[in-house]
Image 1 (spheres, rainbow, N blue to C red):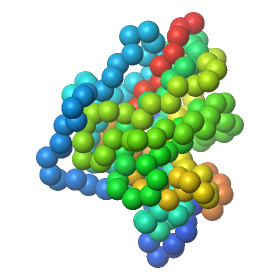
Image 2 (image 1 turned 180 degrees about the vertical axis):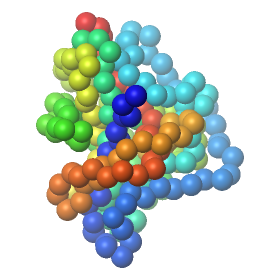
Image 3 (image 1 turned 90 degrees about the vertical axis):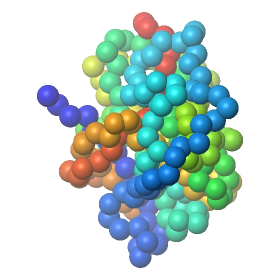
Length: 215
């Protein structure tokens, strides 16, 4: 069976801190539940989702997601692939992105086409999502509702990309993108100094969903 690929992006601002592999963060304590669980919109259809149930939608462990001016000393952007089973129209992107306590509490979500197994052209966004849930909590997601729905084709791979501006408000974001529960071993790719490239590595899939209408 063909394995799904995940993509990571690292724009190195500090070579001493960021090596040539994506960075993760592990949490061994107990997860603090939020007052509300993940909101499931009833008016939209799930085009794709790897999230767990609303009370355990994703793991406490995560990929770092940081802007170029973050306290982490460099940027790491993450992208999640999905392949619609039917022709659909994307209206909403959801990602298990959380705030890790420094910088502006906001991140950009976008929809991208595929270009040979990596993100290609931006189809929608960036949409800035603010007031993200705090890391170590569960199970809200960052939600970006598209201004105009985007048609996607069955059997074609697309990407949900989480990133920040290169400067200005949001470029200092320090956060995470939570793993799918349970973790999965997949193939990855990385963006280093302006270009995407793929690599084979044991990795954990970022958790999220894509919603809309079918057809």
